[in-house]
Image (tube, rainbow, N blue to C red):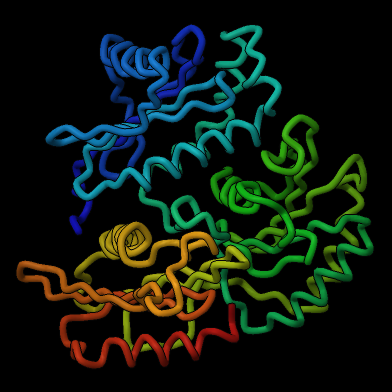
Length: 403
């Protein structure tokens, strides 16, 4: 499992499928947005080879060169997205899921009708500029991981039940079932209606709020890629404290101006204080990823280290790469009834694996899947190898009631 190099470049191309006209091109280098653009001849060649395959009834999904991974994906026979990455260790899975998130972001902002029935290319280009901030966050070194896991990034609050009850009362008072409390793009608490949102909007909405410039309040029109791709809803946000925002998804009512009294009462009820960085319960390891595979929720966090090596960005990349490895290799989806072997020869499904990084690093990664939960840990070289599974098991058991 390679670690993504700091100098790697990621390019994202969006083209009209029928004409091949570029709608936009976004790039990042070392996790930061860059103005570097691909030559038009390269863009034309990448689109041309994909169209050539389609004409022969061949679906071109991905390709690799010595230093670049390329993934193609067409949506509704209208928009083609192409991702190129020169980062070491980049997988097709990561790029493919990123393309799904990018198209979901496009639908979220401009609606599916504009993307499947392109009448005016120049107007669509202008409308898609509103997606650049959100899309760029998928290309960079985000502190979130929902783009890869397709699970909602969450924070485990100390007073979860109180927050839940308060949000439910607030939702009833405002006449909407979709209310959440977000901190830096992570869900702290949400109503049952919000948790029932489908994918990808359940991941995209918090990510969108986290990518927008800070504002005291917003009234933002959004389409739901799964639930309402052609009819917009209103996304209302109110900043309660720095990085802490209250979000509502609603119709024409209520007006944003009428929310302040209800918000003030809700804040007094829970006694909100300025939130610190998203954390997890104390544990003897610096980084973890915990997923609930059925609820589609996850907790992804890294802790500061005294020696500062590896850096938080490196540890996040290591966990992302390890998640890709175990998802594609060690923990495949459960076989369906027709695929299961007979009782005399049951299929052997791995439940745990570990990896030692090298050379000269010694950091250890361990993954454990029990039932509907998957836990990934990054541990220091001092952690005894023979105790990894026991540590992961006890940690997962301790965290299970929280997610």
